[in-house]
Image 1 (spheres, rainbow, N blue to C red):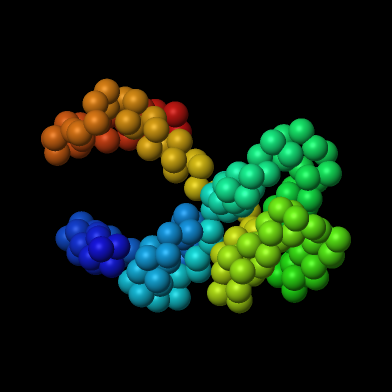
Image 2 (cartoon, rainbow, N blue to C red):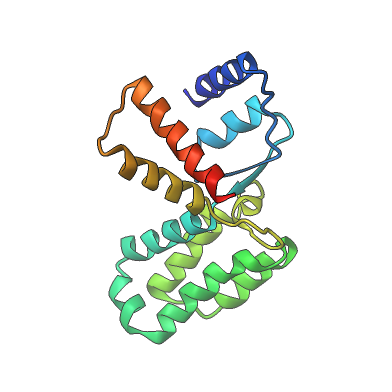
Length: 178
């Protein structure tokens, strides 16, 4: 499905005289999205959204029944935060840091570290969530733009010409700021 969407996007852009050649794409961690982007745009660099990475790990904290201890116990919160902070380390230091931080872990903390190793440490996943030396770490600005456009639209589904007018109006207000 994603591949078809991207192929159609390329065709529509070409009719406007625009060549789509993204160098880097920041995305969520949807398993179908990343291969579709890489297949459609050869050579594109993929970067996962740090915010979504943190959300996924914190969801696992909840799934493991650790939410209360994460909120109320400083030691649990510290272990989780240390795990999330490994995203800011150079790639070659991440595995050693995860091993060091999880060395004395027991119970649900040990289960969290095991999940982290299995889900986030494979060689093809680690570069997606690692944000060492990455300037833009999230896609939150884009999502903020979507939220703003939805608010301005005032309803869920716009007709084509309503959407076009909304985009023209927004472009005008953006250009007025520049």
